Length: 133
Picture 1 (cartoon, helix red, strand yellow):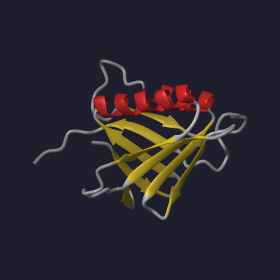
Picture 2 (picture 1 turned 180 degrees about the vertical axis):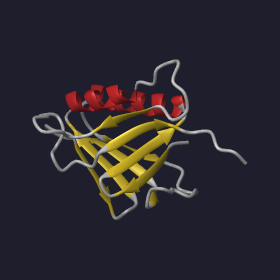
Picture 3 (picture 1 turned 90 degrees about the vertical axis):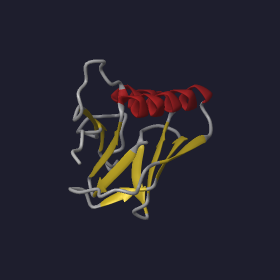
Picture 4 (picture 1 turned 30 degrees about the horizontal axis):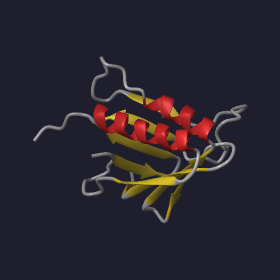
């Protein structure tokens, strides 16, 4: 199950390769339909350190134009974008076959980027690290 760890200006969407592939598939299906939204419940029962909090769900909706990413009430990650920009976002979730735990990719605004809103919350997509008991 996906986990979303949050601190202001840094949001980590963490899961297994299969978790990330499934989320990517859901994004691409939504972009193809070009309307509506999806809500994904995520695991929030863990210690999010070194982040501040564990978010409980992510809502992704079809919008217009640039990708908007925000955290609402410290509980929910909200993403809205045009179908084209949702496909761009999904491309950051392509996990290489040889990827090891800790692999990650960054999705964030930079000067001149016309696809992401300047105030969008930066995202990190990462493969869950192995934990020791």
